[in-house]
Image 1 (cartoon, rainbow, N blue to C red):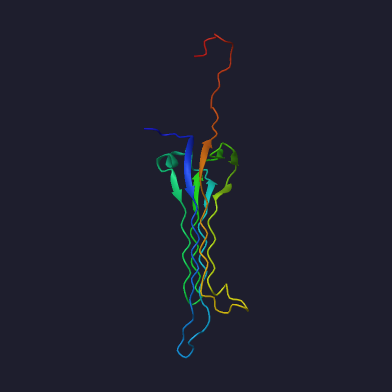
Image 2 (image 1 turned 45 degrees about the vertical axis):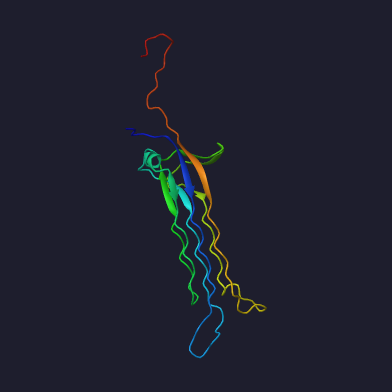
Length: 173
């Protein structure tokens, strides 16, 4: 069984934004109280952060598919949806984040270095936010946007602890 992994391919997906809602305020003696639909919450982002306690990428070798939480939809009575939680992936210091095509996206060196790999989608507007002077009570709301989804390669830069120096055929083995 492997105990040290220095290169892994991750399939990350950020959370989708929550949908807005179309709602009309209802009270006892007000038949049409106006729009009161809430806005959807934003989706969670995928963040890679340096952790000095970790030394290998073994966790991501076993479970390479990671996804952040989606935003919650809005509700009536001007209630906005909750934002999705960000997914923080901890890696050892000296990790290089590359795209699927091999381009370097980030070189994570230093304590508490963070890099947002995939951004979460924005939440859709509710009909309360879409009301204007010309359209006093819109009967529609906007959908939430999808979050980013991509494949990234994590490579750990490692240095040798010991080096042997000498002439060729000098018995260095």
